[in-house]
Length: 99
Image (cartoon, rainbow, N blue to C red):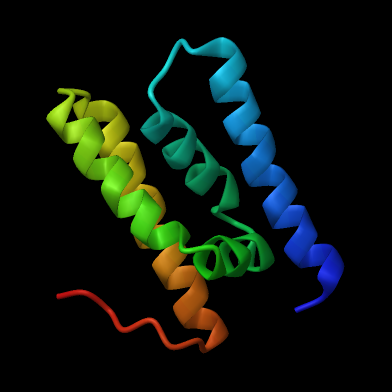
């Protein structure tokens, strides 16, 4: 992976944190789910998300949304998780399917 791609992912995450810290209107798990949803449809973005421990963060965000009684957001996160897993699996990386 190129330095530019790695830096791009770091910058995206920093911008998401900055938006959270300046707006303070939504909990951090919302940004994680939205970040994951934005990666759907782009294999390169999906891979970068995964390499940044995004799938673990997304699972935690889904749990937090469910605990916060936000089922629509949790469902959106689940859909993004499934789509990202399919995208990365299609590329031939080493994420085993859940079952």
